Each structure stands twice: as C-alpha cells, then as structure tokens.
Length: 223
Length: 223
DNA sequence: CAAAAAATTTAGGCCAGACTAAAATATTTT
DNA sequence: AAAATATTTTAGTCTGGCCTAAATTTTTTG
Ligand SMILES: [Mn+2]
Ligand SMILES: [Mn+2]
Ligand SMILES: [Mn+2]
Ligand SMILES: [Mn+2]
Image 1 (cartoon, each protein chain N blue to C red):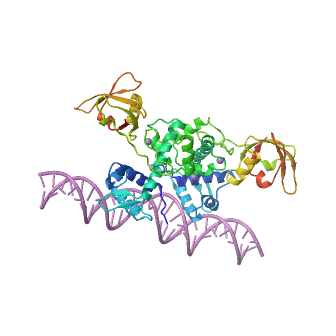
Image 2 (cartoon, helix red, strand yellow):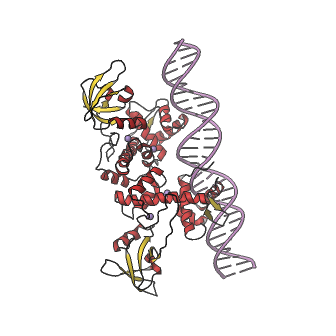
Image 3 (spheres, rainbow over the protein chains, first blue to last red):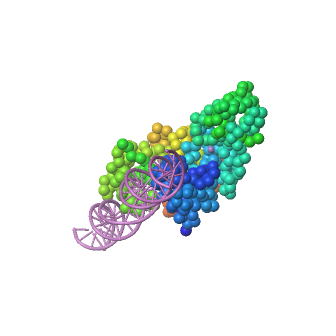
C-alpha cells in the first residue's frame, strides 16, 4: 500500500515544510536550489509524491506544492530527528553549534525510533535545539513559535533571544562570540532610521553592541 | 580517479573482510547469503570492485575474492565505525548488547571522521566493543586477537573471556544472564567426551554451569 | 571417471533518482 | 497587449544496484 519514504523523499518533504512555513506553497525552483538538484528533477519527484498512495503533497502544475497531512507527519518526523540530533551532538559529543548541521543532515535519515526516544530521554526531552529552533513533539506536532525578528524592536524595548537562524556557520560563530544566544536578555539602546542598525545591551555584559539588519533579521526574540 | 565508496560497497568490503578472516577467500554464495542478495548480483559487484581504480578486491572467476590493501583499509574504516558505535550506544544511550548491532549497521556508513574521533575520545579510546571484538586502530590496523574458543579448554584450565560472537541476540541475552561476558574469569571443572559439554565455574559465582558446544564455540577466551 | 549436483557467471531487465535539452507556460517589462 | 524574460514541465538518457532465467564451470559422488 503506502510507499516507501526514502532518504531523498524525506529531504524533499523537509524542505517543502520549511518553505511552506515562510508563507504559501513551495516553488519548483526554490526546492531545486535548496536540494541542489536540477528543477526538472524536482518536477519529476513532485509528480511522484502527488501520485503516491496516500499522496504526500498537493501539487498543481506551475503552482508550487504543499504538504498533505501524511506528508507533514513524515516531514516533522525528520525535523524532530534533526533537531534532537543537533542537541545531542552539542550536549554529548561537544560539537559547537556551527558544526552540527551537516552531521545531523545525514543521521536524521538513519536513526531508529528507539534511538530517537533514547536521545530525547537522555537530553531530558528538550523543546528547542541549540539554535533555539522548536523540536516537534513525539506525537509529531510543531509547537508554535511566538518570537519575532530582533530587527522589529525599537529603543527601550527589552526581549529574550529565543532562536537564531542556523544556516550560516560564520554568522553562528559570530553570534556566539558576541553573546547573542538563546536565553540572552537584550535591551535596545537606540535605533538608526537610516541603516536600521540597532544598538543593544546584553544582560551581564559591560559594553553595548551595534548590529546591522543582516544580523538582526536572523535573530528572533520574545518579550 | 578513485571510485566513490558507496554504502553498498562498504557492506561488501566489510563482509569480504570477515569471510577472509576465517581463512581463505570469500565465495560468491557466502557473500550473497550474508548480504541477502542474489548470487548473480554479487558477481556483478565483484567484477566492478576488481576493475575499480585502484582495485578494491582481487577476483578470479570461480575462485572467490580477497581484499587489496585499499579494500582492506576501506573495510577496517567501516568496522571501526561499527564497533565504536556499538560501544557508544551501550555506554552513552543505555542500549543492551543484544540491541546495538542493527542500529550500528546503519550508522556506520553515515558518520563523519569527526564523529568517529569524538566518540573514540568520549569513550577513552576503547580497544574492544561490548562483545569484546577488537576495534581497528585509528590508523586502520587490526590488532591481533589471541583468544581461542572456550570449547578448546579442558579440565582444570583457567582463562579469561575476551569476546563472544555477536550475531545471535538470543545467545547474547543468555550469556549476559549466566555471566559469560568479557573479562569474566572461568575455570573448567570437567569435560564430557561424549557431547563436548563443559562444566565451568565463573569467578565470583556460587554454582557451576554446564555449557554445550553450541555455546562454547561462540565464546573466546585467553589464558 | 562419468553423471549429477552445486556454485558461479552471463544475459537481459527493472527501478529510483538524478541529468540535459527543448518545449510550454507564467510573469514582467515596455 | 505584445515582447522579452523567467519559471516550470516534458522528453529522452544515464548510472547504481538490484533481479530472474539460462548457461557455464567446478565439485561431488556412485
Ligand atoms: Mn538530509
Ligand atoms: Mn538547528
Ligand atoms: Mn551496513
Ligand atoms: Mn560487536
């Protein structure tokens, strides 16, 4: 009956999920770029996923693709693996948060449900990964993230860092160095109309820091 | 130049290594049985591995196959991964020694050299896995195992368990229960000519245990 | 030592998942 | 609203890794 969900398919579903998150449906080209695959190949796979029994995606020619309930469950399974693995690699094997992504990218497809459960237990059932990203629950629902970009704060506002974008290792190293990490408490000292720079104070640090929008749009905070 | 060593190839090389260990060259049929693949498919792969640049196996039609130096290095790399992973799963995630094999079987192909190094360090650079099997060194040489079957001991001989065969989970559970585990000290109390049974005493235990050859041939000891 | 049995190889095919080139459709610009 | 451009799909191809059936070679046995 139900199709085998290969490693390739898992990667497609995961990236469709992430593209769907930032609004609307995932385009063939965006997927191709993320997966590092020719657009023609993506079209072929989307047709296959849409015709699978049960269908994993909803796909109309030239109109992008979204996940079905089944597709979403499969995606969340992989994302849960990925984020638990990142947490495990950092906590247990001393990886730094800019190194874990690539390793988790491969392991996520291979670990058993038993491995997943043992990791979760060993880590005390964490709700966020090292970058602050929410970990889907064991019954595969995605908790709601209330955070918004640091860039949206203005003078005198105070907030806690919840999560940072994890796709640029260099940015991650920089953020760690300056102390912009999950749970850090931030107060905005001033905002520049012209370039969008924010001057911030991090609780427990001596001096202020000035951050451009290239940084403040990648950091997400909650009041 | 040098061929990509896929997961499939890694499995072929690993099993060829193990068959070569128990004397001579690996036969097509034995490999097929171990890999759960049709013999015809094995032939195809062996031809490919023999014609690879550099060659990974030495293969003459109808005469079985052995590893080249290159093939052996690749095999030892996978075996090192496997045995470190088994040790890690037992020590860090609380797996029991009869559960680890299947999980390690998949992970061995996927972890990075960095992961390998971090595991080895975290475990204190172990030399044997939970079943007592020797772990290839970081420079990919296999230490020499001096142990011999428990079945070869006779009355009044004393020895230490070094390793047990890991391919039957039920046997592993039984061995754990009766205390026949690596480092256990054994004295042979008597030997039965007829059925080959050994009556043994394990240091620290009250009562003697009688073991048949089905067991004593799977347990390896050293004086 | 010839016949039967077992082991192995050859031949031909299939499927997943990629690719390129060309065609079709959608979007943007003028 | 037509032309130019960008996006997406179709068509055809390739490779890895497996399969079955049939042919060949090796080994065992009467
Ligand atoms: Mn992946
Ligand atoms: Mn992450
Ligand atoms: Mn394997
Ligand atoms: Mn083992």
